Amino acid sequence: MTEPVGLISDVHGNWPAFEAVLADMKKRGIKNIWFLGDVVDFGPWPHKCLEVVNEVCGPQRVLGNHDLAVAGIDREEQVDKSWLDIADWTAQKLGTKGVAALHEGIALTATFNTGRLNVSVAHALPVVSPKVKYGETTPYIYAGTHMHPETPPLREIGSAMVQQKIDVAAYGHTHIPFIYAMKPGKLYGLPMQEALRTKLSRYRDHWYRSSLEKRPRPCPEYAMQIERGKKIIVNVPACGQPRDNDPRTGYAIISEREVRIVRLNYKIQQVTQAMSMSGMPLTDSQTQNLQNFLHYGDVLPTHSQKMKPER
Image 1 (cartoon, rainbow, N blue to C red):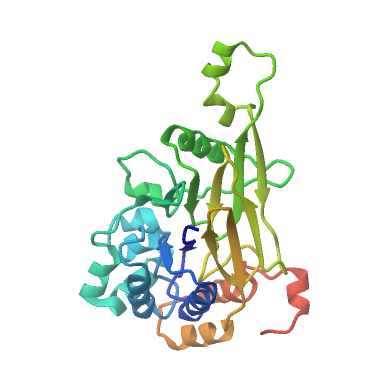
Image 2: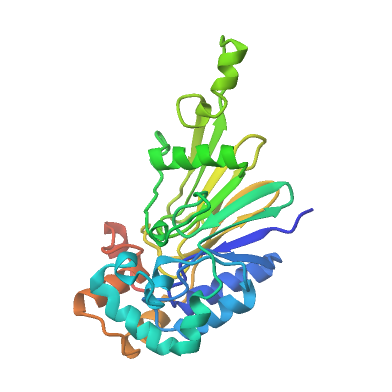
Protein backbone atom coordinates (compact mmCIF):
# COMPACT_ATOMS: atom_id res chain seq x y z
CA MET A 1 0.00 0.00 0.00
CA THR A 2 1.22 3.51 -0.86
CA GLU A 3 2.47 5.60 2.04
CA PRO A 4 -0.06 8.28 3.10
CA VAL A 5 0.81 11.95 2.61
CA GLY A 6 0.31 14.53 5.35
CA LEU A 7 -0.58 18.12 4.42
CA ILE A 8 0.11 21.02 6.81
CA SER A 9 -0.68 24.67 6.16
CA ASP A 10 -0.70 28.07 7.88
CA VAL A 11 1.42 27.38 10.95
CA HIS A 12 1.93 31.15 11.41
CA GLY A 13 4.69 30.81 13.98
CA ASN A 14 2.53 28.75 16.37
CA TRP A 15 4.90 26.08 17.66
CA PRO A 16 2.57 24.32 20.20
CA ALA A 17 -0.03 23.76 17.46
CA PHE A 18 2.62 22.59 15.00
CA GLU A 19 4.10 20.26 17.61
CA ALA A 20 0.68 18.68 18.29
CA VAL A 21 0.14 18.03 14.56
CA LEU A 22 3.57 16.45 14.12
CA ALA A 23 3.04 14.24 17.18
CA ASP A 24 -0.28 12.97 15.79
CA MET A 25 1.31 12.30 12.40
CA LYS A 26 4.05 10.32 14.09
CA LYS A 27 1.48 8.17 15.91
CA ARG A 28 -0.21 7.42 12.58
CA GLY A 29 3.10 6.61 10.89
CA ILE A 30 2.92 9.53 8.43
CA LYS A 31 6.44 10.40 7.27
CA ASN A 32 5.77 11.94 3.86
CA ILE A 33 4.75 15.54 4.64
CA TRP A 34 4.03 18.55 2.40
CA PHE A 35 3.76 22.11 3.69
CA LEU A 36 1.36 24.47 1.91
CA GLY A 37 2.65 27.88 2.94
CA ASP A 38 2.64 30.53 5.69
CA VAL A 39 5.25 29.11 8.03
CA VAL A 40 5.51 32.41 9.89
CA ASP A 41 3.84 35.74 10.81
CA PHE A 42 1.40 36.35 13.71
CA GLY A 43 3.12 33.85 16.02
CA PRO A 44 5.97 34.16 18.53
CA TRP A 45 8.05 31.17 17.29
CA PRO A 46 9.00 32.02 13.66
CA HIS A 47 12.53 30.62 13.83
CA LYS A 48 11.51 27.33 15.50
CA CYS A 49 8.65 26.73 13.07
CA LEU A 50 10.79 27.44 10.00
CA GLU A 51 13.56 25.21 11.31
CA VAL A 52 11.17 22.29 11.84
CA VAL A 53 9.37 22.78 8.51
CA ASN A 54 12.70 22.56 6.72
CA GLU A 55 13.60 19.49 8.77
CA VAL A 56 10.41 17.47 8.24
CA CYS A 57 9.39 18.69 4.76
CA GLY A 58 12.63 19.76 3.09
CA PRO A 59 11.83 20.82 -0.49
CA GLN A 60 8.25 19.55 -0.16
CA ARG A 61 6.67 22.91 0.47
CA VAL A 62 5.23 25.92 -1.37
CA LEU A 63 5.24 29.64 -0.59
CA GLY A 64 2.44 31.43 1.21
CA ASN A 65 1.51 35.11 1.09
CA HIS A 66 2.86 35.77 4.60
CA ASP A 67 6.14 34.03 3.74
CA LEU A 68 6.50 36.42 0.82
CA ALA A 69 5.57 39.48 2.90
CA VAL A 70 8.13 38.61 5.59
CA ALA A 71 10.73 38.08 2.85
CA GLY A 72 9.93 41.55 1.48
CA ILE A 73 8.58 40.24 -1.83
CA ASP A 74 5.55 42.04 -3.23
CA ARG A 75 4.75 42.67 0.43
CA GLU A 76 1.97 45.25 0.18
CA GLU A 77 0.07 42.98 -2.18
CA GLN A 78 0.44 39.95 0.08
CA VAL A 79 -0.93 41.21 3.41
CA ASP A 80 -2.93 44.14 4.73
CA LYS A 81 -0.71 47.15 5.36
CA SER A 82 -1.79 47.34 8.99
CA TRP A 83 0.00 44.02 9.63
CA LEU A 84 3.31 44.86 7.94
CA ASP A 85 4.92 45.85 11.24
CA ILE A 86 4.43 42.25 12.40
CA ALA A 87 6.03 41.00 9.17
CA ASP A 88 9.01 43.29 9.81
CA TRP A 89 9.29 42.02 13.41
CA THR A 90 9.19 38.43 12.12
CA ALA A 91 11.92 39.15 9.55
CA GLN A 92 14.12 40.62 12.28
CA LYS A 93 13.63 37.52 14.42
CA LEU A 94 14.56 35.25 11.50
CA GLY A 95 17.63 37.25 10.49
CA THR A 96 19.14 37.37 7.01
CA LYS A 97 19.78 33.62 6.79
CA GLY A 98 16.35 32.77 8.11
CA VAL A 99 14.58 35.03 5.63
CA ALA A 100 16.59 33.45 2.80
CA ALA A 101 15.63 29.97 4.03
CA LEU A 102 12.01 31.09 4.14
CA HIS A 103 11.68 31.67 0.41
CA GLU A 104 14.78 30.91 -1.67
CA GLY A 105 14.30 27.92 -3.95
CA ILE A 106 10.68 27.44 -2.86
CA ALA A 107 8.01 27.27 -5.57
CA LEU A 108 4.50 28.72 -5.57
CA THR A 109 2.90 25.48 -6.77
CA ALA A 110 3.93 21.84 -7.05
CA THR A 111 2.59 18.49 -8.26
CA PHE A 112 3.48 15.01 -7.08
CA ASN A 113 2.24 11.45 -7.34
CA THR A 114 1.19 9.22 -4.49
CA GLY A 115 0.28 5.79 -5.75
CA ARG A 116 -2.10 6.24 -8.68
CA LEU A 117 -3.07 9.75 -7.61
CA ASN A 118 -1.74 12.93 -9.21
CA VAL A 119 -1.81 15.71 -6.61
CA SER A 120 -1.47 19.49 -7.07
CA VAL A 121 -0.64 21.76 -4.12
CA ALA A 122 -0.49 25.53 -3.64
CA HIS A 123 -1.10 28.01 -0.86
CA ALA A 124 -4.23 29.71 -2.23
CA LEU A 125 -4.93 28.77 -5.86
CA PRO A 126 -4.27 25.14 -6.86
CA VAL A 127 -4.03 23.87 -10.44
CA VAL A 128 -3.11 27.16 -12.05
CA SER A 129 -1.24 27.96 -15.25
CA PRO A 130 2.50 27.12 -15.39
CA LYS A 131 3.44 30.83 -15.22
CA VAL A 132 2.40 31.52 -11.67
CA LYS A 133 2.44 35.06 -10.34
CA TYR A 134 2.91 36.13 -6.74
CA GLY A 135 -0.63 37.48 -6.73
CA GLU A 136 -1.92 33.92 -6.94
CA THR A 137 -0.94 33.37 -3.30
CA THR A 138 -3.79 35.62 -2.14
CA PRO A 139 -7.24 34.61 -3.57
CA TYR A 140 -9.68 33.26 -0.96
CA ILE A 141 -11.56 30.28 -2.40
CA TYR A 142 -14.36 28.98 -0.18
CA ALA A 143 -16.89 26.19 -0.51
CA GLY A 144 -20.61 26.73 -0.53
CA THR A 145 -23.09 24.92 1.72
CA HIS A 146 -23.96 21.24 1.93
CA MET A 147 -27.14 21.97 -0.05
CA HIS A 148 -25.26 23.99 -2.68
CA PRO A 149 -21.55 23.09 -2.32
CA GLU A 150 -20.32 24.32 -5.68
CA THR A 151 -18.96 27.82 -6.21
CA PRO A 152 -17.67 29.23 -9.53
CA PRO A 153 -13.98 29.17 -8.43
CA LEU A 154 -14.24 25.53 -7.30
CA ARG A 155 -15.86 24.57 -10.59
CA GLU A 156 -13.09 26.35 -12.51
CA ILE A 157 -10.45 24.49 -10.51
CA GLY A 158 -12.29 21.22 -11.16
CA SER A 159 -12.35 21.90 -14.89
CA ALA A 160 -8.60 22.64 -14.84
CA MET A 161 -8.05 19.40 -12.91
CA VAL A 162 -9.72 17.46 -15.72
CA GLN A 163 -7.56 19.12 -18.37
CA GLN A 164 -4.32 18.64 -16.40
CA LYS A 165 -5.24 15.13 -15.18
CA ILE A 166 -5.07 16.09 -11.50
CA ASP A 167 -6.93 13.84 -9.05
CA VAL A 168 -6.54 15.85 -5.83
CA ALA A 169 -5.93 19.60 -5.46
CA ALA A 170 -4.94 20.90 -2.01
CA TYR A 171 -4.48 24.39 -0.62
CA GLY A 172 -4.75 26.38 2.63
CA HIS A 173 -4.96 30.17 3.10
CA THR A 174 -8.67 30.48 3.97
CA HIS A 175 -8.24 28.96 7.47
CA ILE A 176 -11.67 27.34 6.94
CA PRO A 177 -11.19 23.66 5.99
CA PHE A 178 -13.40 21.51 3.81
CA ILE A 179 -13.28 18.63 1.32
CA TYR A 180 -15.14 19.16 -1.93
CA ALA A 181 -15.61 16.67 -4.76
CA MET A 182 -16.89 16.74 -8.31
CA LYS A 183 -17.86 13.62 -10.20
CA PRO A 184 -19.13 13.41 -13.81
CA GLY A 185 -22.81 12.77 -14.19
CA LYS A 186 -24.34 10.43 -16.75
CA LEU A 187 -25.23 11.88 -20.14
CA TYR A 188 -28.62 10.44 -20.99
CA GLY A 189 -30.04 10.73 -24.49
CA LEU A 190 -27.12 12.62 -26.02
CA PRO A 191 -25.59 11.69 -29.39
CA MET A 192 -22.04 10.36 -29.12
CA GLN A 193 -20.44 13.44 -30.74
CA GLU A 194 -22.26 15.79 -28.40
CA ALA A 195 -21.29 13.62 -25.42
CA LEU A 196 -17.64 13.84 -26.45
CA ARG A 197 -17.85 17.61 -26.87
CA THR A 198 -19.25 17.95 -23.34
CA LYS A 199 -16.58 15.74 -21.78
CA LEU A 200 -14.91 18.70 -20.05
CA SER A 201 -17.97 20.88 -19.63
CA ARG A 202 -19.57 18.19 -17.47
CA TYR A 203 -17.30 19.41 -14.68
CA ARG A 204 -18.06 23.10 -15.00
CA ASP A 205 -21.70 23.17 -16.05
CA HIS A 206 -24.55 20.87 -15.05
CA TRP A 207 -23.01 17.56 -16.16
CA TYR A 208 -21.53 16.72 -12.77
CA ARG A 209 -22.49 15.85 -9.22
CA SER A 210 -20.75 17.66 -6.37
CA SER A 211 -20.48 16.93 -2.65
CA LEU A 212 -18.99 18.60 0.40
CA GLU A 213 -17.62 17.55 3.77
CA LYS A 214 -17.31 20.40 6.28
CA ARG A 215 -17.99 19.59 9.92
CA PRO A 216 -18.06 21.76 13.04
CA ARG A 217 -16.98 20.79 16.53
CA PRO A 218 -16.88 18.32 18.21
CA CYS A 219 -16.07 16.15 15.16
CA PRO A 220 -12.37 15.20 15.53
CA GLU A 221 -11.94 14.08 11.91
CA TYR A 222 -13.84 13.35 8.73
CA ALA A 223 -13.04 12.00 5.27
CA MET A 224 -14.18 11.73 1.67
CA GLN A 225 -13.67 8.53 -0.28
CA ILE A 226 -11.62 8.57 -3.49
CA GLU A 227 -13.48 7.06 -6.44
CA ARG A 228 -12.64 6.69 -10.09
CA GLY A 229 -13.34 9.89 -12.02
CA LYS A 230 -13.87 11.98 -8.88
CA LYS A 231 -11.93 15.22 -8.57
CA ILE A 232 -11.28 16.19 -4.94
CA ILE A 233 -10.35 19.65 -3.66
CA VAL A 234 -9.21 19.85 -0.03
CA ASN A 235 -8.79 23.08 1.89
CA VAL A 236 -6.31 22.10 4.61
CA PRO A 237 -6.97 23.31 8.18
CA ALA A 238 -4.93 26.26 9.43
CA CYS A 239 -2.52 24.59 11.81
CA GLY A 240 -1.66 27.73 13.77
CA GLN A 241 -4.72 29.96 13.46
CA PRO A 242 -8.11 28.35 12.67
CA ARG A 243 -10.97 30.65 11.67
CA ASP A 244 -13.95 28.30 11.45
CA ASN A 245 -15.22 28.70 15.04
CA ASP A 246 -13.11 25.68 15.98
CA PRO A 247 -9.88 26.66 17.74
CA ARG A 248 -8.34 23.21 17.41
CA THR A 249 -5.28 22.78 15.23
CA GLY A 250 -5.42 20.38 12.30
CA TYR A 251 -4.05 18.92 9.09
CA ALA A 252 -5.08 16.71 6.16
CA ILE A 253 -4.11 13.21 4.98
CA ILE A 254 -4.19 11.85 1.43
CA SER A 255 -4.19 8.06 1.11
CA GLU A 256 -5.10 5.70 -1.70
CA ARG A 257 -8.66 5.41 -0.48
CA GLU A 258 -9.58 8.78 0.97
CA VAL A 259 -8.82 12.40 1.80
CA ARG A 260 -9.13 13.05 5.55
CA ILE A 261 -9.15 16.14 7.76
CA VAL A 262 -7.96 15.79 11.37
CA ARG A 263 -8.51 18.27 14.23
CA LEU A 264 -6.59 18.24 17.52
CA ASN A 265 -6.55 20.03 20.86
CA TYR A 266 -3.34 21.76 21.90
CA LYS A 267 -2.02 24.20 24.52
CA ILE A 268 -3.62 27.45 23.37
CA GLN A 269 -2.91 29.33 26.60
CA GLN A 270 0.81 28.74 26.07
CA VAL A 271 0.59 30.61 22.76
CA THR A 272 -1.29 33.66 24.06
CA GLN A 273 1.11 33.99 26.99
CA ALA A 274 4.15 33.76 24.72
CA MET A 275 2.61 36.25 22.33
CA SER A 276 2.11 38.82 25.10
CA MET A 277 5.76 38.46 26.14
CA SER A 278 7.24 38.36 22.63
CA GLY A 279 7.52 42.07 21.92
CA MET A 280 5.49 41.87 18.72
CA PRO A 281 4.34 45.40 17.76
CA LEU A 282 0.63 44.69 18.10
CA THR A 283 -2.08 47.27 18.67
CA ASP A 284 -4.73 46.48 21.28
CA SER A 285 -7.25 45.53 18.60
CA GLN A 286 -4.73 43.29 16.82
CA THR A 287 -3.89 41.56 20.09
CA GLN A 288 -7.58 40.97 20.77
CA ASN A 289 -8.21 39.63 17.25
CA LEU A 290 -5.29 37.20 17.39
CA GLN A 291 -6.24 35.98 20.84
CA ASN A 292 -9.85 35.44 19.76
CA PHE A 293 -8.71 33.44 16.73
CA LEU A 294 -6.62 31.27 19.03
CA HIS A 295 -9.26 30.79 21.75
CA TYR A 296 -12.44 30.72 19.64
CA GLY A 297 -11.42 30.17 16.02
CA ASP A 298 -12.91 33.50 14.94
CA VAL A 299 -12.75 37.25 15.65
CA LEU A 300 -15.63 36.86 18.13
CA PRO A 301 -16.76 33.85 20.17
CA THR A 302 -20.06 32.16 19.45
CA HIS A 303 -22.74 32.17 22.17
CA SER A 304 -21.88 28.62 23.24
CA GLN A 305 -18.19 29.47 23.41
CA LYS A 306 -18.96 32.43 25.68
CA MET A 307 -20.66 30.01 28.10
CA LYS A 308 -17.59 27.76 28.33
CA PRO A 309 -14.67 28.46 30.68
CA GLU A 310 -11.30 29.43 29.17
CA ARG A 311 -8.97 26.53 28.51
